[in-house]
Image (cartoon, rainbow, N blue to C red):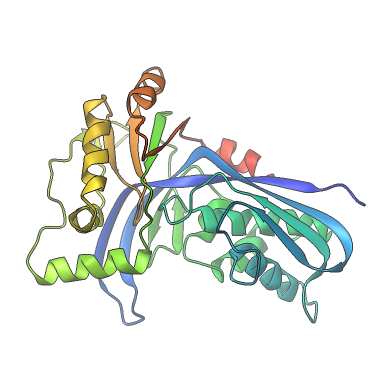
Length: 296
């Protein structure tokens, strides 16, 4: 058996997420700041004669065509001009990024699979070609082939790299429940119709190291999700009490992040532990660091 090609897929947080109105295609216009963090899944592709196979090491995560890794294999196979079903490779997915958390685990896995399968099949596609395939799999999948700090606009699928933010410690809190993206946006629409504010708490400005100066890290989905799941607001406030420079919901949730000076993050993580919260300690990744983990 040939040697496995292993790619590590960093998760992301949304440092900011502003949501506009509905588009004709049914999606919302968004403006988001995406940031890679050091929490990673691992995707290993091993050349092996026979039908394509996917094994997943994570409870409750499917190992069939509903998994974005499988769909990435089908998309890359077709893009390479090959007929029939993908074959001659075995893929193993080891998950650490929680599902339905707003951390982009499924999209990160799809991007990592494209890189690993490109190597396992000997395709040698350019990064531009891989991004084109990634764009067919989901709005934010192309971001994970780039990483670091980027701005996403449109429906989130137009990705523009920007200066990496300063290096921060990151504490991620995940409750026992998840939140679907469709539900979160539906709650936002309902709350706007009812006249409720998008942002219902003070949001301080944070110096992220950009020449433009401090910025407000706001997520328009946080208030509507918190109104249905009060624990989200409790997590945000807990991060702030433990000295977070900024804290908030990532994506549509249900995970919350706190940004800290690296030296203070470990103590904050220890003090934030609860029996019903998953607590993870890490840091932000630069574009170069994220690309290195992805094997790019």
